[in-house]
Amino acid sequence: MYTFESRVRYSECASDARLSLLGLVNYLQDCSCFQSESLGIGIEDMEKNHYAWFLSAWQIEIEDLPRFNTPIAVSTWCYGVKRLLASRNFTIAGQDGTPYVRADSLWFLYDTKLGRPVKFPESQMAYLEDTPRLDMPPTKRKIDVKGDFACAPAITVTRQHLDTNGHVNNAQYIQMALDALEQTGQALVPWRITVQYESMALLHDTVEPQVFESEGGRTVRLARPDGEPYAIVRIEVRI
Image (spheres, rainbow, N blue to C red):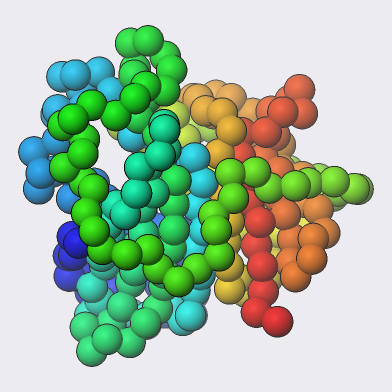
């Protein structure tokens, strides 16, 4: 298990002085990036050997959001590899052990020269460990979407949405979905966020948010102009 300690910064907070959802997801992805660097297979190695780790799916459960200046510990571990997918858990907890967030995720290795997913080389098995999976429901690769939907204003991808891979960062899709809920008068306080990533939105692409009613919450399809999804984000409330 890899862990780093931090403190909730003012710049990471929402208007209620608690960690924002965008800040939360950024902590999770930062933790996995820090682990890569600690193992010597971080950004420089990825650029040198033309590969990148891409997310296929998220499942994030939120017990509470830490307040500004709260000390936190963010942890991650890879508990399984099957075919082209690697499974990784995350937690965010107070340094006193208070549980805030737990998450499960599915990742794949992408060859940036070939332009497709590839099998894991031996070097990437350094992530795999025997820490067991969190007690969470299975993380689905597909989120069902059907029925009528409300349209939120279209989004043009700008540089602030991009990461080092040159496409919209995974956390930004979640923020787009949350913004779409607010813009259509359907804002929710999330308990569980699940995400299915389908394709890469690039600079100047147009993202069209479509908001669907779903059991226990709302689902947002972030679609291309042709209707195919970049990502599908489900927001569930605690029942």
